Structures are given as C-alpha cells and as structure tokens.
Length: 111
Length: 110
Image (cartoon, rainbow over all chains, first blue to last red; front, side, top):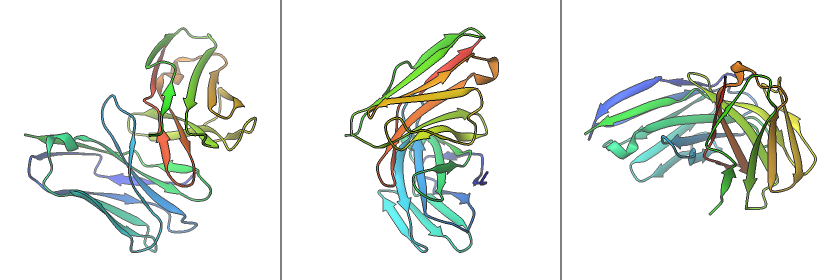
C-alpha cells in the first residue's frame, strides 16, 4: 500500500496568519496529486488537481505547488480566516482514478 | 453541479446485522468509490467500480461487498456488521481526475 504523509497533523492559527502544510508521496508512477478541503458536516471539496512537476495552482487566498521528482506538495493559505477552518486532505493518484489519501491536516483559525 | 447522495447521515446497527449503505450520483459518472474514514488514518478505499456490474477491491475490502446494478447507484454491504466497522463511510464518483464526494454516513455498530 502506498504511503502518503501529511504534516502537521493539526494547526491552530490566529485570523490573519499565513500558513502552509506539506504532503509527501511516492515519486515513482506519479499520475496526479489532489488537494481537498473537508469542512465539518459537509462533503470533501476538491481544491486542486495537479499533474505536472512545477505546477502551481491558486484559488483566492489558497495556493499549491508540486514537486514530483522529490515527491512533495505544499498548500499555502494567505491571511487565514475562520471560514478556512477544515481538514485539508491530499491524495496521490498512481494510475486510472484510484486515490491514496493522507491522514489530513486539521486547521483551526481563531478570530 | 454534481450531486452525490448517500441514503443516511447517521446509522446505528447491532453486531451481526446486514447493513446496506446506498450511494446515488446524478452526473452519469462511470467511476464510483467507497471509502471509510477513521481518526488519524485518512480516507481508505474499500471498493470501487468502473462500470455497471464491475467491481474492484480497494485497500481494505475485508468484511464488505458491493453492488452496482445501475450506473448511478453503488451500494456498500456489510454482510455481518462488527464493532470495528464503526466509522464514517464516504461515497464518491468521478470522471477523469476529480472525485465528487457524498456527505458521508456515520455508522455505529453496537
């Protein structure tokens, strides 16, 4: 079974702080890397799907980078807001549509 | 918008009962998946299906089976529920890369 690791496990920040999380994945047989946001009592929601080494994606205050050669991706949140509080999941796609998820990073933003 | 629905948000069953978890998607997606989520472990793939009547084992299929008689519906079956199957169960459907998730069913087996 492939190993996808996320760090930190949890993070508590103040409103306005910028923060970042890491996702580590196997560097071989790479197909795509996914980031999801999962808010309490809601469905996980796709943030980014990244396929190329060096990819950088941005959606509002959230951005992500990808390094497939060394097997890591960073997710950045600029100026965290309470509504950013969620679990952030990354998932490695080896082939086809099968995803292997990390355990997630729980973010809590205090106002 | 893609919609993935699951039959129950919360379910309480007794040990040994047969349990059906239903998932329906409305976007004609070919691929459907069942995951369970446990604290500290992330989402783990139980079974998936690429087409009607097709199924593939995921990483943790033991104690589960699935049924896909129609394209839009993918059922997860716990033949004889056990306490270690207490978990959050999530269904997803996909086309190409992105997976769309249902809201989850929190199953408690007592």
